[in-house]
Each structure stands twice: as structure tokens, then as C-alpha cells.
Length: 251
Image (cartoon, rainbow, N blue to C red; front, side, top):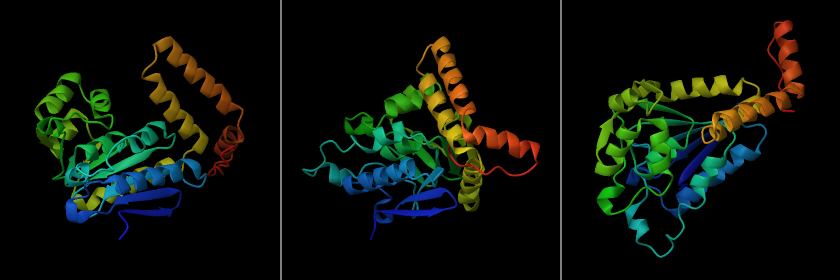
């Protein structure tokens, strides 16, 4: 049985963690398979956006603790999380059930998070004598307030979907039967946008967060002028004038 299921259609790649018997806890093979899927998203010009989800009753409960005790565990965070950090194409997390530890880190590595009612979130590493090793200590305070992030990290406590939505950890909170519908709706909207512009948009926003405002504005200006020279920019203006859908070429 494949530990990760990858399906592609209409410019969207669905990546589903498929270890429901352990609530989608990830071992090394699983982490590497997810990284492979994000490589494919980044490198395939036909793919515009990804959706990450989990099979069974949970999104992902994090790293498989039994596997952590195995001899091949060294460096298990070295590939997936840097891959997510460098992606120029958007990814949406479709979260249901438990989203903990490395699962929450993967969700934080996504651009947009949608939660089903009944989902739960938390970082329990502190109770194991660890800290999050997949960028969780850095991503969480960039998504919610510092105080709320530190409380979750220091205590290992979990929060429900309503609290996650209140804190801004998730963009949308929907009934469970509407979770994938909502994610696919967002993904389809993104897929209809100009692909080069989406990629530049993500790059400028993410890089700009760590730059002084004047340099961030320069970065935006550079991207704007680069995009204005592309065929897609000309096509977008022409399609608007002709009141038709644009035919994006990603060039």
C-alpha cells in the first residue's frame, strides 16, 4: 500500500497521506514521498496548486514515534520541510481530525489552511523533551500572535478548530463534508490565475516578510516589471479587453 497517494487533475495535485492505521503518522518513507510530490508540483508546468490531506480519521499526528527509535531516523527533517519552504507554487492544507507535531508543521508549510469542524491542533514535542524540528518554532509565530504561539509551544496543549480559526491559524472552518469542496474551490480559483504571477506573488510575499520594508518594496517592483514583459501579462490585458477568459502560457 502506498504511504502517500498522489492524484493530478485540472492543474491540481492532490497529495494524501495514507497511513490511516497510525492516524497518518509519518516515517521516513512517508516524508520522502511527500517531498517527491512537492518536487513534482514545482517542476511540472501543468500543475498550478497542491492540496495536502490525510486518509482516515486524521490529517496527520506527526512523526511516527516508533520509527524515531529506528537507526535510519537521522536527518529525517532535512528534505521535506526545506522543500516546502522553497516551493513557489501554492499548497492548501485540508485538515480534519488530529493535526499535531509534524502534521501541524506540514500544515503551517502550506499557504492556506482549511479546517473541518472537529479538527484539533497542537505541538506536543515539549512533552517528549524535544522541540519541533520542521520549522514549527519559526512558522507558528509568523501565523498567529507571538504570545499565543509561545503558549502552544511551551505547554504542548491542543486547541480545537474553533480556537484555531479564532487565532488565525486556519483560514476557513467548514463542516466536515464540505472540507474538500472548499479546498478544491480555492485551488480552482488559483489555477485560473496567471501561473507566473502566482509564483512571483508567493516569492515576493514570503521573501518580503524577512526584509526591511524599503528592500521588500524593491523586490515587489522588480517582480512587477519582470511580469509586465511576459506574454501572459499581455494576454491578460487583451483577454480583459475582449471580455474572454485568458489563455495562459506561463511565459
